[in-house]
Length: 242
Image (cartoon, rainbow, N blue to C red; front, side):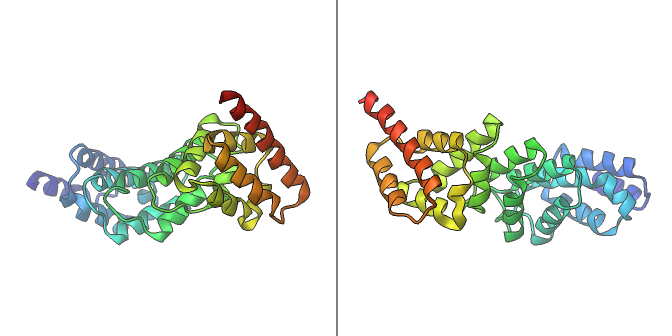
């Protein structure tokens, strides 16, 4: 640790981002809670032009330390605030860092909100990584965004989105409530409705329950017909399996 402290004292005021990055990379090879003071210094004291060149490594090592150490709120704030003013490479690293720290640190409301935002990011790896984080949460941050995911042409996105539905919306009543909320039922395209029924229902009883709820709903008729038609088709498939 003394050698690490000595290296820190030698480079902390150099203003050389390459030297600082080399130092951070060295720290990341054996991450320790003891290094958080060094990271805090760089986060709060380096000039913006230097900070932008070391931000990726700062976020990465916070993730490595956060795997085994609960991070304080100021580091969580730094992680969440950095997302909105960073390029896609750093944004993706931030989402992966959140995934790493989620088992040790209670994610702040800002970070949970960020994850809900990230599943609509234009960069596909960010969206998939954000969905993986959601699967670790206790509550679903934004149902509407999840339904939008099911319309994606990317099969991995759809797979992750369906897995989230299975975890957080486990029965026909909860699914109907989620579809009914904010007119979410209007979001799904026919293929997405079909995929949702296939994955979420393996019982005629639960499927009939969803049918009844939709029939009694105040949904617009054209949408109601789409769902009921898909339920009819899937019921015939299930009956053939009996």
